[in-house]
Length: 216
Image (cartoon, rainbow, N blue to C red; front, side, top):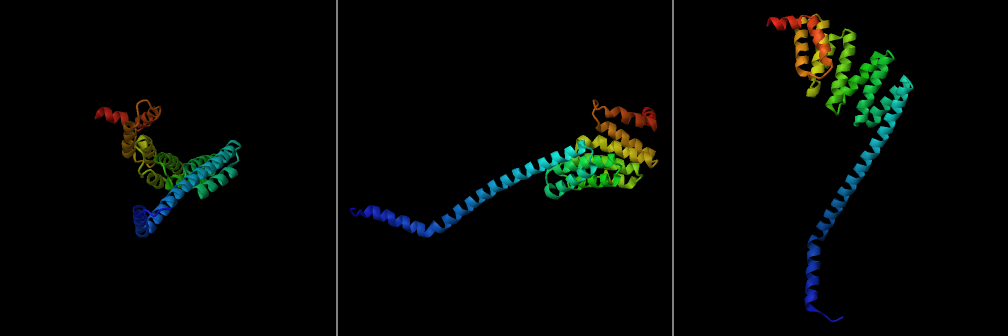
């Protein structure tokens, strides 16, 4: 092949550039490929865990249908141990709590509900668990514990239900004035079309709330 000084000069320039920047470029490419591999691997891992969690949740639901409380609790425990950072774990805790309550195992029901509160990834699950746990604590006359359970931060749509439950606890403590205030707050925070408003109004009327409002 004929010697071309211009081509040789270009080749020398490329060699010089590669000698200066080639190592850096190689590491940049390696980092980019590693990042892509990590992202795709993590996505696959997440999808795989979500699938496994959904399958375990299905098993839990089958146990509920069969009224096999022991199997429900085992499935819920496995869910919390293996997939505690998934929404399935929170749902499983609520389902397991109901199963335990129906089986007259209130201690287990409270444990499951407390787990749902402590590990909540979603404010709605936390609110539902808190309302149910406070209800059990109310039945067991654990009034201070119930009020503490209801004292957390919850999504606005649950403000009415939280206040309503607080009213129940305060009334049980014979704190009528505070219960009245809680029921009024519950009415204020509950939509007009919500069927629960009627029950709240009945409770408020029963402790003289309507009469005081009229007098005011």
